[in-house]
Length: 154
Image 1 (cartoon, one colour):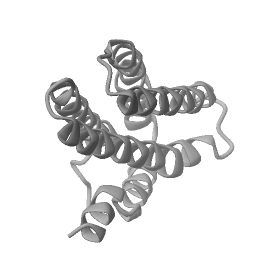
Image 2: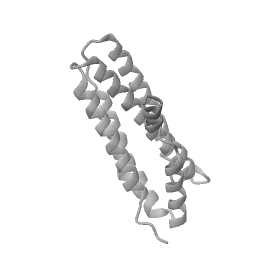
Image 3: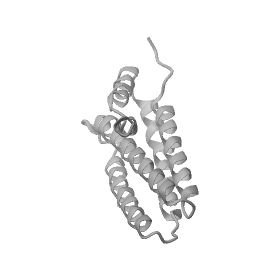
Image 4: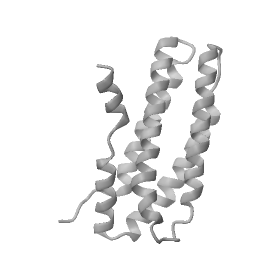
């Protein structure tokens, strides 16, 4: 049974969800501190979930005896940088002073272009259907941190 689902389309959808969370947080800045705090938490959790999915499902598989995906260590390093940026945003948010997240948005946009423009299409083109289904299954097995957070707070 051949699947129409591709790694690229799954991960673009995840990137779009992160983008929505970034936009939601940015709109809340300077308006309502409770809403900004809530939006930030959702963004942080969503971003961590996305990184976990990439690193445990896609990057781990792609690194198994493969040197043709040699950009992956750099992408993982970028994840660390973005988490540092998120921690800096958290600290800025706590000061209740006005600030911009434009640097974060620019950085994450460049990162996204590498993944969507190079890595994911390369995986879709070079992996056989069984390998793709293995990765997709791993993606689907990773529990959603957002759902876990929502369940704990309902």
